[in-house]
Length: 456
Image (cartoon, rainbow, N blue to C red; front, side, top):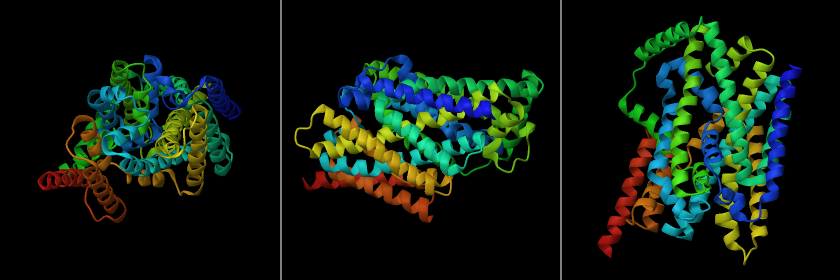
């Protein structure tokens, strides 16, 4: 246990050191928010991959597959891989060529300053809630590995992420993402190799996985609308995330941004299949688990020891840190760049960076409070899913690919979509909330635009 705690703490210290070292190169707002648009292929690819590959990918996807077979992997890794592919094909080039620092800039240019502020109000809570979920998950990992109380470990988790994200901005995030991505891949592969041996070798392990896949797939029958909802949420609901857009905008060129996103999509799918395989293999190695989401930690506890267990713990920490730093920076960048800085009179670049850093601290503290007071990670993730969603996707498609519609249409799509999704998510008044909100948002945007043209 001392080796494990020491290994995890050393890993955390390295992240802090990187953030502080990178902070010396921050000269202006572009440096801080989009790394001065100088990310090359390694940093861009691994930053996109690691930002997307969160704790829910390792823990949640493995648990879902353990219970439901491949149908449980709809979102992870399949849906989110398609999301990254969709960003690369449909949006990356246009976003980079727009010269934006945030997605808020796109919406201001297309729909005006009022809508820019409205979109910030909708997007920021999602980032903060996701950060809260990751901070709480980080605290739970530290608690499990150290024996310390959850309150102390959540505090440590929040402090670490706030410090290195505040100091180094997106370049620090991208640099640590590269390390975290490699650590994540190594940790998952180590567990896969060990479990393959425990199952009797590659052929026997493959046989067990295929057997579990067939048995669980045969029992999985869902209405087509439920299946549609399960695919649309990760693909269309996540392609509008500031966390993803910022990596595209930070690339050296439009071509690099697009290609890095496409490569990251393939990497995400390849690595994401490892938790899927582990979940299926775990169904035969450790059946009847009361808490399915504990399948990977339980398998690691039983089959990994010493340095190997440290590597796996580092993989979980990597999955968490690589997501939460992006969440905090995204929330801060939208508030500082699109709301606070425009209110100032001729601010200097130093002032803009200071405002963004203060925003990261504020977002981190708010996420910490939510993580500290929430009943669990699942509650935070569920709350995050109720914000934005379909309405943002609809207005983004029209903003990037069409001149059809204007400010009123955008407001109609955003508000109607959000209302339907909240009504369905929180009150159960609407079936299939995301699919329904997507349809309502398209209808609202088109109707308002049509009436405006008829009146004009």
